[in-house]
Length: 203
Image (cartoon, rainbow, N blue to C red; front, side, top):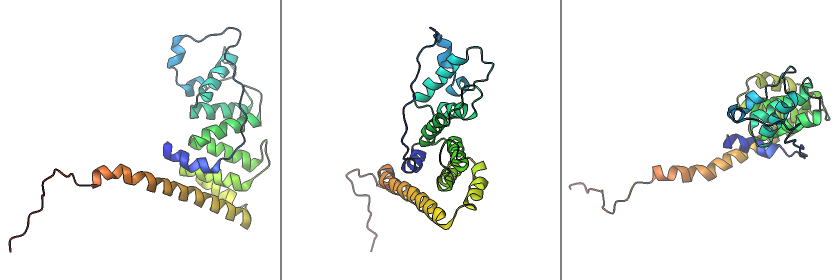
């Protein structure tokens, strides 16, 4: 996960506003059992959820605490607009947060928002970059889609996308160079016990 952050950290230079979090609705409080429910399950919210408002708050709290899956699912709630009012700005915000945490499907959805121009100016270059990152991070559906987006880009757009992606991977490789030697040093250096282990060959 740490390495995936290095790939996406250079790319995402978004100006993100903070979502105001509600901590309580009509005095509703969670029992201890809710603390055991994974964030992803708490965020799988259906319209028939008996306490819909509280369920959304639980999802927002998990997302605000940095849970990438909760951030992604909250982004989908705002994108679809079936459970809560559709809000492209908030969908983009939460997809961006999940993307910087290496969430491949969030990168995929964010790429589609750029591709379609949902709540933002259509941007094939950014869509292509994000779709490629989703593919690199393991979301295989993004491979063919990135090729499709690439076919719609002009020469300048492709050049910018390729340059940005190459910079991402160059920075990643540089990070590896800085971290790998210290990690391998203990394994590569012979242990010095204070006695020579060299035996001279007999003449």
